[in-house]
Amino acid sequence: MTTHEVDVVVVGLGPGGEALAATLARSGLSVVGVDRRLVGGECPYYGCIPSKMMIRAADSLAEARRVDDLAGHADVSAAWGTVATRIRDEATDDWDDKVAVERLEAAGARFVRGHGRLVGEGRVRVDDDEYVAARGVVLNTGTEPGVPPIDGLADTPYWTNREVMRVTEAPESLAVIGGGAIGLELAQAFRRFGVRVTVLEGADRILALEEPESSEVVRGAFARDGIDVRTGVKIERVSHDGGFHLVVDGADLDADALLVAAGRRPNLADIGLETVGLDPSARSLDPDEQMRVGDRLWAIGDITGKGAFTHVSMYQNAVAARSLLGEDGPWADYRSVSRVTFTDPEVGAVGLTESQARDRGLDVGTGLAKLEESSRGFIHKAGNEGVIKLVADRGRGVLVGGTAVGPSGGEVLGLIAAAVHGEIPVASLRTMHFAYPTFHRAIETALADLG
Ligand SMILES: Cc1cc2nc3c(=O)[nH]c(=O)nc-3n(C[C@H](O)[C@H](O)[C@H](O)COP(=O)(O)OP(=O)(O)OC[C@H]3O[C@@H](n4cnc5c(N)ncnc54)[C@H](O)[C@@H]3O)c2cc1C
Image 1 (cartoon, helix red, strand yellow):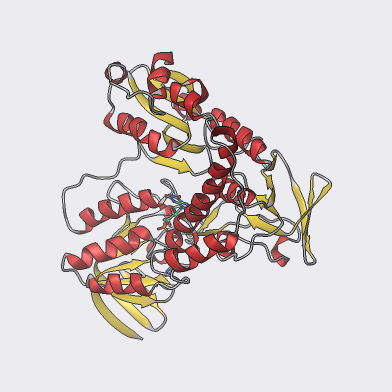
Image 2 (cartoon, rainbow, N blue to C red):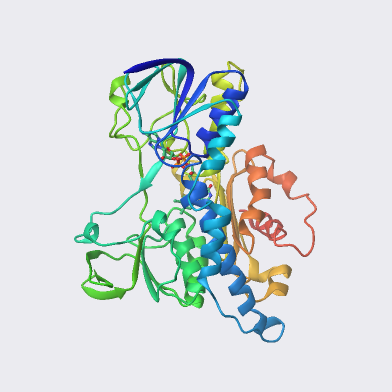
């Protein structure tokens, strides 16, 4: 066993951990970053970036197919190979993190590839090396794909988000377990490449965590795309003999490929949490506003349960950096966390949903506007489905949440997110100029509808 004295050890280098290790090293601290897989984590190799490249490709096909409604005729032939090559070459460097490791080392950090485990306060072991961190340890160990305990599933060659990003040929048919953001984004992308897709969701609606209006608009768009969406289902059994056979609510369903997108499992069980008095079976850690979860111990990213998004991980990295460098804040605030499901139409949301706001006992007002009924929606025609929903705290006269579903819904969301974050009075928002004819102008209609 060799012991190394350092200032900070970052265990797990997802987007936030990588950025934090680099920032602290650039500030002159001696920093060791540990990752057992790829520097950068899920987002660049198996998550956000490759999935959004698939979606960009799929949306271009969908847009071309809309030419018939708007501009004549287009013959479209889809080839999955083009997007597969782009993901391999441009997004992931063939799933090689050489560039990220070099970037980290150029910032002055030391990189160690291996499984890091706490062995007491401020101490991390990786194989036969122990790192003693004078200032502290940061955990950024992220998540693994969650696999539901369905009879037979574990013995089949199903895909998770990791395998699906490496697919070089689209299957003829695909079953997707999970009607949340990841399952829906990938389901629609494959459908637009001509794959027969069935989405299987146990809850009574897809996008169950978002507003019911969002679920309804996306369900309608999926029906028009020809995606078979089944909600409230129970998958009883899965087997594989060259193709997949599922038993769903007592009926057979066959598919060439099966994607499991049924939530994420936090990497907390095997990182030595018990050695610092924390519970390794917890669903998440519970950081204070400076991201501290114990003495000389910080946590950022998905394992904090504050929103499993790259932008949350990056936000928390900046907070933790200030804390570790002895700065004065500002500290973490989650009132206006935004999230986007990159289906077509996109579902952008920020802050509280109506039901969350009611559960908090607020005096809730809501305002709705249908995008199809806006001038821009009318002009846009094909692919114009969408809705704006605003959630206000009437007591304070401010928005506490909002949703923008529609073309570029994630971009339209920006204005609502700024209003929630800045607690801009509704009365002031109502006096704004909203450019004509934009999609975001529907926010003005929703503001007028706010009860
Ligand atoms: C398909 C998909 C699409 C997504 N799309 C989006 C999107 O559009 N927008 C968005 O904001 N977010 C998206 N996300 C979520 C996003 O990828 C994560 O929120 C983001 O990666 C931040 O996660 P993290 O930093 O907590 O951990 P991760 O990215 O999971 O990184 C954790 C790292 O820790 C390492 N590690 C774990 N345990 C150890 C250990 N004991 N020792 C050493 N290393 C360890 C892992 O190898 C990994 O590299 C998507 C996720 C998926 C799966």
